[in-house]
Image (cartoon, rainbow, N blue to C red; front, side):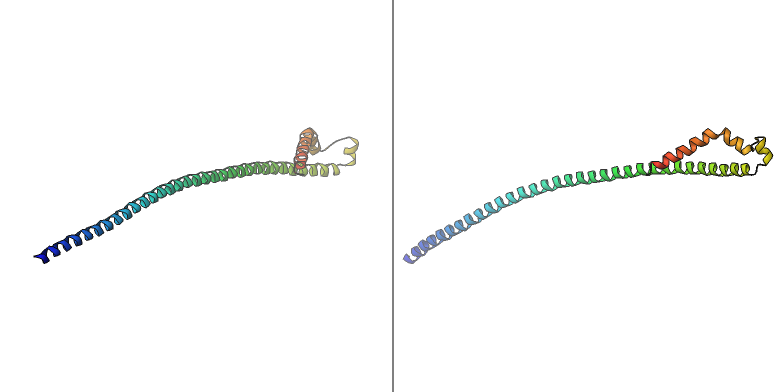
Length: 156
């Protein structure tokens, strides 16, 4: 009987020590779990911060991309306006050149007709029809030539 009592005492002490050890292990694991939960919470906060920063960066990038597109559109509009101005200037210059060409051809005709006049025509002061037409439109021709001259000066 004594042996049984010693065994039960030993079993009680052994069980108490096992329980104490298990409680220590449980306490360590609870501390570890608590620590991991804290780390998880910190990580979640950092993740939220990173997500917010990422969204803020996306907004800024979109803003700058829109500004870039706006600047490109503005530059395109400016180029389009310059093209329209140059196209208009080209058309005006072409018309002026055509008018000057007509004037030059007509003047050549007048000079040829004046050279072909005879001596009697000179004495009687008879002029060819082309010369009379030239005299009738003389002011118009002078304006044409001066307009062309001054438009050419703008380029120099």
